[in-house]
Structure formats: C-alpha cells, structure tokens
Length: 154
Image 1: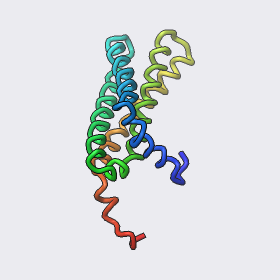
Image 2: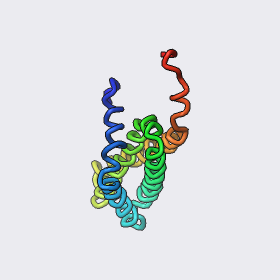
Image 3: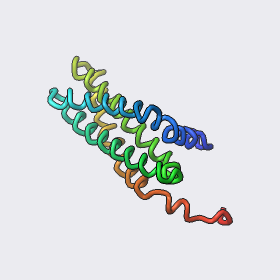
Image 4: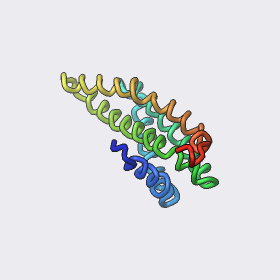
C-alpha cells in the first residue's frame, strides 16, 4: 500500500466507477463465483471450514456493498468517506477466496508443501479474514465523525 493518497484514489475509483459499472455486473460476477465455490465445497472433506467462513464473508461483503451503494446514491460523501475501508474489506475477502482455492488444490494431494499451504490458509482464515467484521463497523459508522471537523481545524 502506498499511503500518499494512491490507495484512496483507487478506493474512490472502486466505489465510484467499478462497482456501478453495468449496474453492478462486475461485482455480481465476483460474488457469484465466490458463492458457487462455497456451495461446491461445503460438503467436500477438509473444505467445510473454508467454505463456511468464506460464505459468511461474502455475505458480509454483499450486505456492505448493497448498503454502501444505497447510501452513496443518496449522499456520495457517505460512500467516499469509507471508500478505503471498503477496499480493504473487499481485498481481504478476495484473498480469502484465493486461499480457499489453494486449500482445495492442497487437499487433493498430500505433500509437505500442500500441508504447509493448508496451514497458511487456516492462518489467513482465522487471523486475517475476521478483520472484515471490524471494518464493517467502521463503514457502518459512516461519515459523520470525519465530516465533523471544520476546515480551520486542519
């Protein structure tokens, strides 16, 4: 991450142009792919823990996306104020999906390398993925605290 404003510009682009493009078609395609993965793997030996956690995460991201979209249509500042938080949440879920796919492949053939991959996937799912819950709370808090400052206070 580059914290000179680049991340926030990318976040603003995500919520301002990428998400609304085609009526949300790109987001829906991503969400559908993740959801299909969770359903396909929910009863697969060794994959239940990943499918369950990823299913909950994509549901959280879906709800947050819908709420943010509705708030953003009514007040673009509301979406812009939490754009970086949303980008972080989206990224965490996207990487969890990739770790789920790696876990699926690792379970297909037992080797030391694959067992290490599973440990790494479990680490991510248990130590990183839960961060989306706190990010969701930040997003839900909205813009009020940020916008409470007067320009003279800077």
